[in-house]
Image (cartoon, rainbow, N blue to C red; front, side):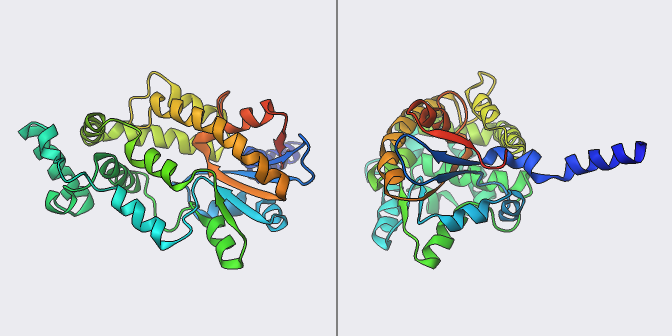
Length: 290
C-alpha cells in the first residue's frame, strides 16, 4: 500500500497538466463559430518550458493567425521605434539630476550595460530603465539561452501565418516611452539603480506564480502596496484600461477565424485582467488542460 501511495504522489508531482494547466485557455461562445486559444507567456522563462504545457503546439497548429501585443511588420516600424527612444534635442539627462545622482546613474549604466553616458545620454529614461531592468534580471535570475518571448510569432512568420498586434505603432510608442512624465521617468531610472533588489524580488515572485499557473497571484503581486518596484500599481492601472480596448479589438479577430493569442501573463489575471474582461463580455474562457 505504501508503495502504491508513493507512486501516486510521484505521478501527481510529475504530471504537467496539474501544474501548468492554467496557462493555456480556450475561447469560444458569444457568437463566434471557431474556437480560439490564449497562451500566457513570461519573457523571463526559458523557451523549453513550452514543452511542458500540454497541447500548446497542437492547438497552435489548428489556428490561422497569431495575435499579440504588438507586431513589428516592417523595417520602417523598427526605425520609428528607435527614433522614438531618443530624447528631444532640447533635453539632457544631467539637467534632471543633481551631480551625485547623475554620477550614480552614469556609473551603474556603464557597469551593467557596458556603455557610457556619452553613448546612452541621448536615450529617454524609460528606455534606459527597460535596458537596465532586463540586464539586471538576466544577471540575478540566471537567465541563459532563449526565452519563450516571441516564439510563436517567429514560427508564424516563418510558416506564412499572419501575425497581428492589439496595439498600433502609435500606441506602442506611447506605452513604451511616453506614458509617464519625463521627470517621473528620471526618478524611476534612479530608483531601479538604487534599489535593484525590489525588481528581482518581484520578478522572482511573478515567475514562481507563472510556473504554477497562478495568473491571479501575479495581478495581486503587482497591485500590492508592498510592491515598490518600477512595475507598480500605476502600471497595472494603465494595463487595465488598455485591456478594455483590447477586448473590443479582439472581437473582430475572433469572428474571422481561429486565433492563437499570446500575451504576457501580467495582463491576464485578476478582476481587471483580460481573461475576466473576456468572460464579462460573454465569451467562454476555460482551461484547455482541465
